Length: 512
Ligand code: HEM
Ligand SMILES: *[C@@H]1O[C@H](CO)[C@@H](O)[C@H](O)[C@H]1NC(C)=O
Ligand SMILES: *[C@@H]1O[C@H](CO)[C@@H](O)[C@H](O)[C@H]1NC(C)=O
Image (cartoon, rainbow, N blue to C red; front, side, top):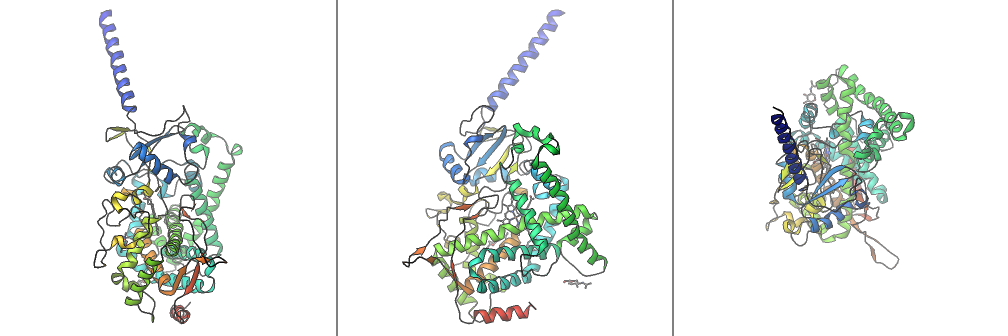
């Protein structure tokens, strides 16, 4: 009898050991990466600036999947389109959650759905957003996008040196129109716009990896520290209350107009109808706003830099505009089909210098295996989109350079055969179920702004006292979750004598 018991215990113990050893050997098959130190892992090896360039170097040593232990947080960085698409696209059912960001969730009360888990509630909000922002719905915003382009040209004529301010105003204004039905904002100093942009900025800081210690697994206990002990908690909780009041105000205004029987068709009104709860509806609406405002303007700043550095591309685009649009009128969305070079320029700017070179992180929700490696549940997954976009195997030897022609065939027609990009030719709109829901609107804004800018202006480098061009360095970045070029100047001059008359007429036609 005792011997049987002992035998059982023995078997159980051995099974335990075997399972444990198996698990250990599986664990040892984590993907390769730089060797860290105990506990802290690779924390202090993480690059403090331009991480996408450093990860790109590491990839040559470790291969397409780099594993990092960041103070206890399993993290992978995927460096090829195959690895990224195999996991985030083709296994989207388990790669679509987001990392759990403590400070961001305090700031938003866990209500910002671009940062929540891919659960049923997220699915509903995302479907709601898709209904308002899909390819077909996006066409309803054409007139607003043209209007923003007119205002942008007008302001550039007056104050060309602060060009990035005009881009920021245009994307803030468009997003407010789409989401809240506001008329165009002529001045970005509007108090509500300033408050929302301030909030957006806090969110972007909180979402940028490594901003707060509490985000690291071994420092998670800080989450339980009381308010009086931590400034980050006080700041975030206070911001949440303040922001909720403002956001409820914005949605309440929309509700008032609906109650008064006004025919308003903005996204916030649709969300209010579906949700029936002011607090929830107001956060669902602002989630769309904050995801849409910074990105487009940052992308346009990169466009200006490309025009300075690649004047031949600028000339080709202007030739096309002169042929198709001429100098008597402004471009419109009706020209879309006839402007393949401009459309290729949109693709190329998103490829050459996309505003999120490391994408937005996803989280793996179950243990997984890939190419013989073990990927544990809860791993944070980054895609080094920079590496994908500069892969010479995919884009050829000139991948470093800005060249819209790579997206055109011999007859100048758009062709996109870049694998795993869903016909985009680039990966800047993200992956799987989390792919940018505003990408049709973003695409259209970039198209019309770029067409207007090149129709009206020559964009050139400033020259120094000796007449030499002052060229910006396109590898200097203004870092954050949205990556812009380091500040640079350029010379923006009208291409035609009567540009200002045509623009003034366009303003008058729109009652501005
Ligand atoms: C050039 C402009 C833009 C770029 C480059 C861009 C890029 C991205 C990226 C990379 C993501 C994350 C994808 C992922 O997790 O794999 C994303 C998500 C998102 N974008 Fe955009 N975006 C742009 C403009 C917009 C606009 C104009 C809107 C709305 C009007 C918008 C709304 C959203 C939303 C709501 C999400 C969150 C989706 C989710 O988590 O399910 N974006 N975008
Ligand atoms: C509301 O506006 C939309 C487009 O602006 C229009 O198609 C629709 O007929 C209007 N409905 C009413 C009841 O006025
Ligand atoms: C963006 O524009 C390009 C060029 O016109 C097109 O190939 C692509 O499908 C568009 N993508 C979206 C999401 O509208």
